[in-house]
Length: 210
Ligand SMILES: Cc1cc2nc3c(=O)[nH]c(=O)nc-3n(C[C@H](O)[C@H](O)[C@H](O)COP(=O)(O)O)c2cc1C
Image (cartoon, rainbow, N blue to C red; front, side, top):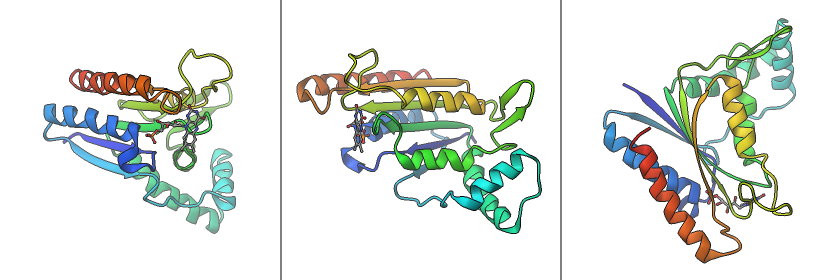
């Protein structure tokens, strides 16, 4: 049975636009795949392990193929639990609001935990990085309140979709479909409402062909 992991990185619950669009996508997708198993990971509700001194040292030791200290082994094992839950899915749905031109901090923490050598990537001194997460695909919903793709300077920059799409590619997930809602939420509620409706319709359309 195929398994989809939905990672929600907005804490705004019923007010969240990205989560509502993700639900619209999922409702349509599940109608086509009633047997689909869905794991929902709410990054603001489920605490992640702290990623600090011993975890960073464990990463550096693993990268250099050195033996890990007992403290590092412990941190590595805690990270592995997070990675195992991630990697057991066949496909992924992410909703990612823009926060200060980047991604919300628990999503970055989650990325730092699972992005380990030998798990999601390998490194070759001559050829560089190689992604290890193969034969998986992702659907990503990005939202922002001011920033618009191709928008005027002074309205922000994209270290959000560019960063996250790049991370997916980096770990080996090359089949990525993304959907943007950048509805001037904070500037023009009328314009935002029109854009939001169009994005919800687009989410349904994409779910019926994904
Ligand atoms: C902490 C925080 C930081 C934000 N930073 C930006 C930003 O840098 N650029 C932008 O366009 N919108 C920014 N926004 C607005 C959100 O991206 C926008 O409202 C988005 O729709 C939120 O997604 P959500 O409704 O799923 O939570 C920010 C919102 C919050 C709460």
